[in-house]
Length: 433
Image (tube, rainbow, N blue to C red; front, side, top):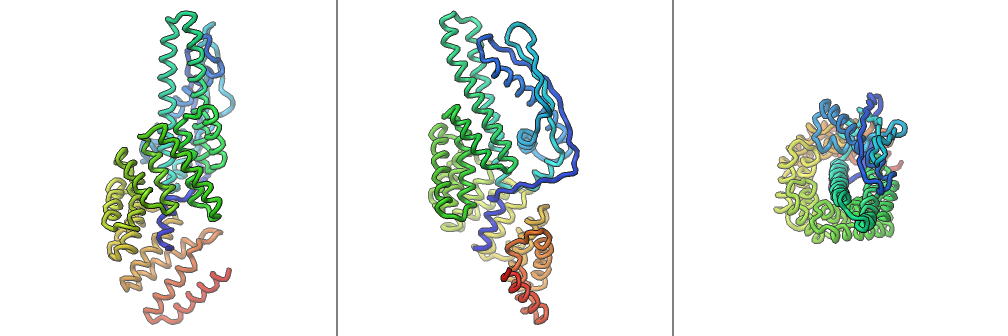
């Protein structure tokens, strides 16, 4: 049970890290928004502001891309969710019509690259998907707006009155999308309650905002997974399912919502329902390794061959990602009992891992696999490395006592009674704390 929990935490925990001492760069951009006079001018100004922000974010993204090996999707998720406005936007109405220009200055900390690398895989996966989905919301809203503006140019007075209502809906939709984008920034910072508040406000403005439904459901699903109080966890799970069910009613082909709902069912140990949702998510998006991983977790309970195929597919899709090797290694160790293959996967995970807390878990797990192969010397080396990493933080890893006990058992197997007793005494001491 301890190992399976660790595998889930590699992907499912809500991790946020802050790293200072990096350069904060600023970017300035100006954009215009041309609109009809009868459009809501405050919304026109906001549209001009957002276009200027997007121009500045493109420049910031180009800089971060040139200083990292991150993908375009990762860069977009970082810039869209970590930027801060410097002061207030400067607005100017360029003529007597409703043409507004907006100038903005934003700042982004270069440390966000390191912050990103320190995030867990499910967190990065969620941020990328929600950024892409939010951008699609704005793009669809822009298309509807341009359609109405084109119709308004040659419309009669009566038609214009009808179009005012249409513009009002599009504006409300835009403001709802703004709430989603702001909620995403809170999610990025780990402020999940604030994110939920803004997603809720987005739905109050537009009850059919499918992305807000999906994202709020995703957070409630995470809350349910990480909540030890069973009644509270069940309440969060019910809210998650209500949101995700609605998202899928609004868009039956929403792959991310199927994946998020599958995650909720997985957390509830309803593996058959989870597998059905992951099947659908994979059908709609066959290149998302996250869904193969979680479907593999589900199949571990019922079909080892299918679980192996899913873990292999995740490795194929993300060959340089340490967590896919950790998860497959965990599967080889506990379900297949192929400890040599487990060692190979844990070794690959160690080679690719930079976070010390995850290195500690990888070394512990490889140590366990070596111990089961009766390679006690190598197991001791790995347990020692795990202890070094686990001892560093002020808040010690809860698995630390068990690493001492495992190392003590290896010393005892080698006939080293003194070191064995010292480790077992340390285990007892840590257990009493």
